[in-house]
Length: 454
Image (cartoon, rainbow, N blue to C red; front, side):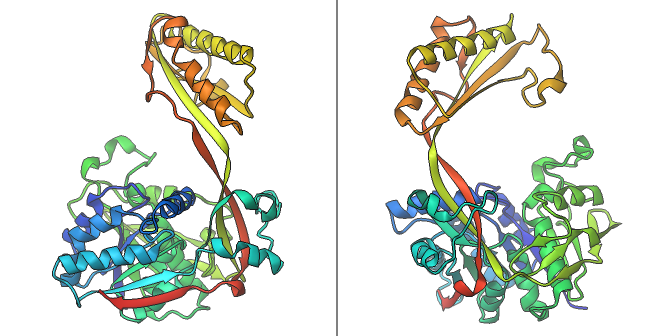
């Protein structure tokens, strides 16, 4: 039975910069995946590219590659990352420049998976009758067309497998499924057919387990979290994948964290909709068929996975401008910390009313007095040492929100006593970027794959 080792060293843009380096240095792996993209990330990158055509990708990735590329070349470790964001071409050019500076020119093949950015095709697609309705509300995209900031198709694992088949060692994609980063290498290595639904579902679930990095190795783990060994040196996950579709989740020996059945179950439930219909571009995976077994310390075997045929649509991630928001905080100290926060909030609201300011939404919460649990937390203690009053507003008038910002700080001197400062500093008015999920026929868009030598 053929087995490959696929590690994931990034769960989001902003994850540990040391994790990819440690995965490459601390033990054998065949593939390193790096997952940088979330829905909001695409709109951020789109704005960056609009300001400068050289930007629009995860710049952290370039620094990581500068540190690990020599070892990856020496050990023949292949890297698969969606760091390309909305500009995979610029990202790949930056990696090629890193290779040249490291004296690796001519030794590294870089693959680019693109074609997911359909921002420039939206009007064409709508004219063809592809309405890109909101999957949650059913409204057509035309209702917010003038406010759209980004639009990207979720491609799957197939173009990644194609790039690997063409000899790429570093693969940079735009928007693709998180699970596709792991499934792509399996398809390439094992030669799985495009309709081998059970094995494709197994690879998809393997990708889902490791997509959030250390969240499956003891990080953010609810079960017995106090006893997690050496969390300061937590190991990131590795899939030991077999060609029959079974696999194990493990980590490098000597690293912190813990891999258990309970911890893997927590990650399996993450972002879960219908467990029998986990839909990706590659297949429909049935999470109810997953069998887990603790076969050794820090090793969980996964088997029994079933899948069904893929749908004929791609999911599209669209972001759009939805007004503005501002969130500010004040810290009140003992005595009567909770009562002071209640009074401060009431004073602020009266002053805003007196100024004739209105907002679409205004929400206040008192952190430290049951804000997370609401009524079930019971009445707050009268002896709370401190609380944080957090007030948020949203609306379409930027000027109204800017005035809210200016009315919050004065409470430190003209409101209830013992304000200990603005929590997080003076608030800023920020644009709200909203998410618009939609579907489109696979026949209407095609991924492009390019491979070149750096």
